[in-house]
Figure 1: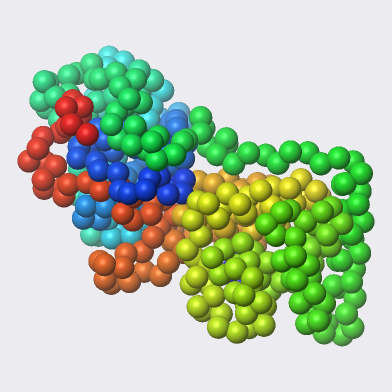
Figure 2: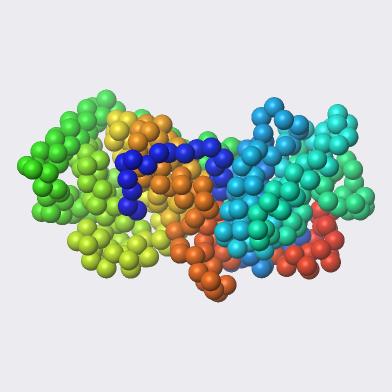
Length: 417
């Protein structure tokens, strides 16, 4: 989690993806491309609009779900320049096949009526983006998703994929969508709704937190000769933090802690670590510099339940903080979301943090990880221990191999799950 205040936040061409936590008690079986299309809102955590979405597969498992914006002002459905970058992310995560879905403002039939060559040009743009990257995955299918109809742009079988497409309403009742719903998975109407804004705090609580915040910052910065953090004081602050969990700290304690976090990153990291599976013991070890590697390894296994519990604490703290302090809290929340594999939530929180403080370095670091498709687990060369990117946890959705899928036909007729 180490970061540097000199980091320049970079937002162009960013991919966003998100696994909204553990979707079911077991894997969701997906046997056809239409099942992947039905799964996309659940994998991203929101319903995409004007987006190119890539669902990357590694063997029989979904490895990554991510999106880039469509170009503004170009032909209908034209991917943004971010598509070749996303193709590179697929390669870095060792995806062997990919389904691409383009979410456009108009149905494919209307696009073709206005410009007979637009859909062919779109297909070629997607293919060329993959060809531009060495080791790119096979293109399993390319699906155009409009407001009311969806269809494959690669399938020539009119019985499977009629030129007018199929009704998008059928995706909501698809067996794959039903499996996610039964497993407790939901998705937001749009990306901005993935992470709710915190409820506003009362003026009295805000004033109490602000006064404590100012005192904490002054205390942290007044140590003579740049002596660094006070080991006794920071240990006391960590214990104060641990004493309030799992409930949010009250306003005065929130102000004191957030003020200290602004100056002492080690304390901030230890406090955030306490919200992960590493727990209070890991937080104390991290603050003392003990067994750091194993602490962070345990922290990287935060699931949706842990992220939800952390969110309750951090949203309340954010509501009690002024912009610079709120940015610290939002950035910490973004790091936890990235750790839990919820890339979309991490993206939203990191962007909010940088809106409050453009120099917020942890938020910038999270965005850099998302830009490059890096997950909290180290990349290995063993297929039995795959990297976990910020899109989807391995094993939560399984599919046939690309070869098997092709032998079975396009499958967008919805005849099987």
